[in-house]
Each structure stands twice: as structure tokens, then as C-alpha cells.
Length: 412
Image (cartoon, rainbow, N blue to C red):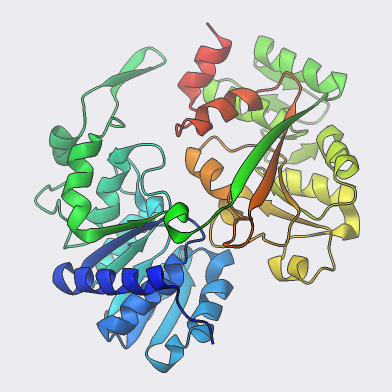
């Protein structure tokens, strides 16, 4: 049977005391520090009998394994499901504690997202444990709706985000096209975090004794001439007309999306169909990492089709199959693979493409880290002269690559 490390046991004691006093606990623990098992220990100490654990679909199996291997099954029943299945939960009132994994997903600005609204409807009066390694990946304003879901929010006196922002966000505006809009991303860090100290416990990898470092290297690949020609035409005309399909980029947002796709060799047409146009990146990866076991992160669905064509039977999308040693390569979509799974059995992580969000950057690059692994190498495969370098620079600074930044980069 597995046992908790000393810092996890103490964290659980501290967390249980907070939960008993305030009915809400936020565990802002760095990735790989064991917040899943620690949150279950909080439930054991709390003497919960029925626990709900909401997470991502790919993380369900690991959570269920922790539940059994740490012996929590002797103390309480657990239901583990993904956020998208929240509406299917029967008799939600039966749970003594609700754990919400990767709580930053509820951190939308101005308006609560669909998941946050449903959680609030079902569990607002329940004791809840919120988990995240990146509580405010792009803005401290993202904290409001993570607590809005609970009746025990420290900001429950504020009816909505706008009233809260009046006191906790520095006023600013941003221009989108010819219009000016209020920018709510400048949350006042000291004021926001001061309000949360009594219900939040934090722990870093350094505090946990991790000695690992992550080295990143960017490798550039020259794409086919026709790829660059197509992108140039799209910038100039905002449309590329083929025999049966059309690439339309009549707004800056669509132009950004199409250029992002094309620089990695695929495109989605106006019809909804997708097409593989350039294998250069995948061919380079297969050649460069020919003798290595790697985890590849992709962005667009068509990129997985492209990778499958290049790798054939050497590629899997299932973590258990990869861990068995039968496959050389595992391919994961960045959003679904960035949280809740471990790629400790990979020699390297290889990013076929890059997401525009900071949270994807910071979480996905850390998938190989373990207590015993001291060195991780992450490769980014960018098109020579492509957009990826610009996106990379922005997300590394914990910002999101937006349409406005894109316009500033290319239409000065």
C-alpha cells in the first residue's frame, strides 16, 4: 500500500482544518506534488463517507488507482467522473465533499462558463476542495469565478464579477477593431491573494524536494514552398480558392487560426472538412527522434491524422499502451493531455504545435517530471519563419496570444 509523504500528511491536516472551519479549501500545489492523494486524505480526516471527484477524462484512471493504492477505499466511497458528465450525476446531494480538479478551468473573465454555472447549481452549498497547479495562469482576475461556484466564497457579498472587479481590478481598455472594450485582466494581485490566504494552501516542487530541471529547445523545420505560398496568398487576399474547397480568413481571428494550422501542415476548410497539406514537421520528428520513445503534443485534430500516417503502428494515443513499452510514440491533444497524466516513461516531450494559452504551456511541458527524475528535455518543433516563435514568446511570459497581439505582430 502506498503512503503519503510527510509534507502531504501535514498538508492534509492543515487542509482538513480549513475545510471544517470554512467549507472551502483551495490547494494550489504545483504539478506532480501529489495533491490528488492529499485531497483524499483531507476527506478521510474530515470523516467523509461519500466523495465526488471531478476531473478530466484522461485522469480518471490514475485517480481511481490512487484511491485504491492509498487505502482510501476503506474509509469512504468515491465517484470519479469528468466535468462534461456532471449533469449525469444522480442524487448530487448525497456527497459529503466535492473535489474539483484543475479548478482554473472555471476562471473565465466577466461571465461564468457553462461548467461553473452547473457546478454552482449542483454543489454550491457543499464543502468543496479546489485543486490547481496554476490557479491564475494568465490573470489574477481568473480567481473570482473559481470561488463564485461556492456559497462560502470569500467574495459572496459581490453579486457578480463586474461588482467585484470594481474593487479588485485595475481599470483598462483594449481595442478590438474600431471598438474599445473594458479589459478586466488586470487583477490586483496583493488584494486578491490576501483575501484567499485563510482558505488556500500552496506547495511547490522545490518545497517537496523535486530536483528536476526542464530544458527546452526549439527546432525549426523548413516547410514545403507551397505552404508558404498559400500563407502569403491568405495574408494578401484573405481567401484561397481550390477546386472543391475554400480557405476563408475574412476576419483577423480566422486568419490567425488558418495561419496557425497551415504552418503545421493542415487546414480546416469552410465546409468543415480538413486536409493534410505538408508532412515536413512529422517527417522531421520521425527522423530526428528515430531511436527515442517520445510523447508528442498536437493541437488540431487533423494533426493526429497526419502523425498516424507518418508513424503507422508505432503510435498510440493510450497512456497504458505507451507505458507497456509496445509503442515508441504516444500522441496527445494538448488540452486533454496537459493535466492529470504522467509521461514519465518518455525520453522526451515533443510539441508538434503550440497552443495560444499560457496554462497549456506551463502544464503540458511538465508531464515527465517525477520526484526521482532530475532532468527533462522538451522540444518545440516550429516552422521556419512561422507564427509559432511569436506565440511561444508570449505564452512563456504567462500571457495568452490573442488576436490583438497577432495584428500587432503582422499588421504594424
